[in-house]
Length: 113
Image 1: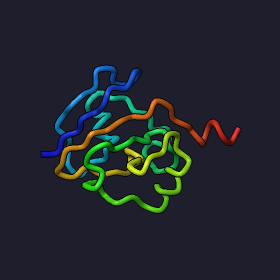
Image 2 (image 1 turned 90 degrees about the vertical axis):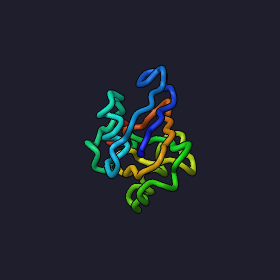
Image 3 (image 1 turned 135 degrees about the vertical axis):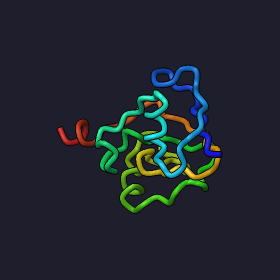
C-alpha cells in the first residue's frame, strides 16, 4: 500500500498528516488531493522549486529524477541529498515520509525582477 506521512509544517500542515496515496501519481497531486496546499507556482511543469520536498523515508522507491529536475533542485532552499520536486516524483507502492521545507524560492517571480 502506498502511504504518505507528512511531517508537521507550521503553515501547511501543523499537526502532520498520514494518508493512503495514489500510486503512480505525483507527491504534489497526492498532497493537494488530501488538503495540503503545497505551492506549485509553475503549475507542476518542472519550471520552479516551490514544490520542493525532502523525502525522509522511501526516497529510493520514487520514480527517477530528470536532468531538468536535478538542475532546478540545485537552486532550491534547503537542498538535501533526498530532495525532490513533488510535482515530478511519482509515488510507488511504498511508505513515504515527507518534510515540506520552511521556505521556498519562486525563481520565476523573485529572481528575475
